[in-house]
Image (cartoon, rainbow, N blue to C red; front, side):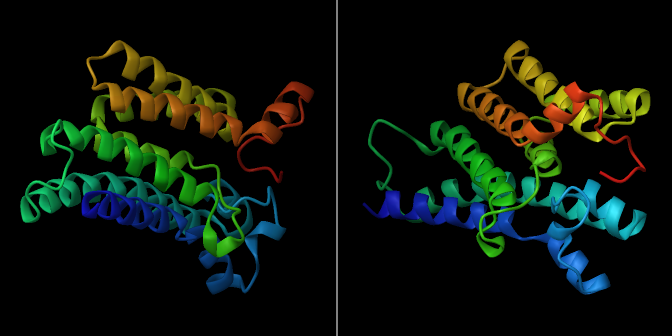
Length: 219
């Protein structure tokens, strides 16, 4: 029982980490505005760039990436530590080493959900792209690096952040399935990639209509 309670606490911490509304706070602190009422209405770094400028967007981007990194690092530290402090609490068929990938998987999903559906913003938020990149880099750096490279190339070619983000998500799914990765990592990337793409529903409609703004233009 104690093990499952600790697991729930760990997921709650990852969710709250993701829920930290960095873009929203930047808008309030720098201009006294609710960034959800401007631009694309998102709290992500792209809308911060459009609304507040380059340097605030860079800070928000870095913070959002670090949220994803932090969730994975926390999961890898917390669950083995808890198992050591409280021996015998995990189910007898499992051991801390086999539980770690699943802990990373669940923490990654929790931090993505927290960023996209922040409890502090009435369950609104960003599209979880930067936070997802942080999860990928901390979980499996080859997958994260590959996704980041595709994002960069696509952005340079098309100047459309949403398209680049979705291509990066699809790349991450392809890489995690093609490389030798634990099953929980594959499930996390597939679920996370689908979630990120689903968060771009409005962008997909604009892309199909040819009205999606390019980088540097107002949404």
